[in-house]
Amino acid sequence: MRRAEILSVLEGEHPRLGRIVAFLLNGAIVLSAVAITLESLDDLPPVFDGAMQIFEWFILAVFTTEYIIRIICAPRPLHYIFSFWGIVDLMACLPAFAMLSPEWAALRSLRVVRLFRLLKLLRAAHALDRLTDALASVKGDLTVFALLAGIVLYIAAVGIYIFEHDAQPEAFGSIPESMWWAVVSFTTVGYGDSYPITAGGRIFTSAILFVGLGVIAVPAAVITSALIEQSRQDRSRKERHEISQHFRHGHQPRPRHGRGDRSPRG
Image (cartoon, rainbow, N blue to C red):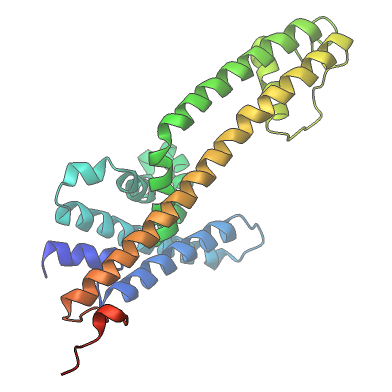
């Protein structure tokens, strides 16, 4: 089996083996998430710990093997290794280092990166590709709004610090502490752990929130517009592909019935 064909199997695109391999890999990811959940229970029998250990070794062997095969079969191995999915695949394998030797017990915190396996479920999601393309098309606009949001957050933190520092030194003792209030307020979460009590602070909050809500809401509209445009382009490409396939198989377009199609009477 050629390298390109092996990659198509792992990607779930192979006509014969793709669905089977994709089902098995996705099933392993889901079972791994279930195992992480069960490990947090305290009243499980001792035999369960041994079973989970064996299962974790099996899952690590599966994903490590998949990662190595992808590196070997990739047209550009370094490009895959440093790509987003390459990093996700690597993070799914890292917990193996915490289980190889007792001397590496300090690395057991790496077990939390097992959660990265859930991201592997999105590899076969075409909707994610559409979202990625949409974000790439508006990355310039999003960068501008991210910079603007950072500036507005900083202005809000400095302003509320000036107005509320003397009245509430425990909640607004510094600008970094005030930044937490700005983030919570702009995202409309509103935990209620810190809020203005002075007249100046309330007036400033009312004014800055109208600006901040606009800065936070605009990127959502930009992304939605990009997704709609990407969906339209996908439909257009699909229609062109269907038309090209239609002509490739020797089909001719249906003749239009009209005056120009009438055969001369003899």
